[in-house]
Image (cartoon, rainbow, N blue to C red):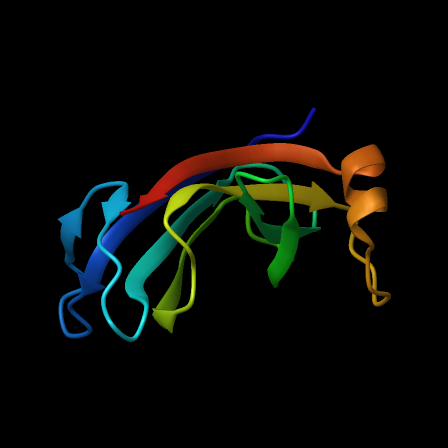
Length: 132
């Protein structure tokens, strides 16, 4: 049984010195150049299972885009606690609802298609985002 916990948090910015999250919420205003925000993945694994995590952005119209792949490597450690920051600056997202999803798969050097993620991946976490 997988013992993986992933928390996703959206915020305006992150203080690089302290790691403090500023402006935590799920609604962001689109400016002239686009929208800027950060998505933080807090990953806690208490098993020794190595896996790939895939960050996906799902738009309200059903279109999906793979954004990032993170490998969780356990080695001899019993637990892993990581914080991965994904900053999006002046992104050209249209107003509407979006959803970030994190899927896990066994470690692979090959690219994974969206169809394969839907069939073989495990949905580990999600967070909704609104652009106004």
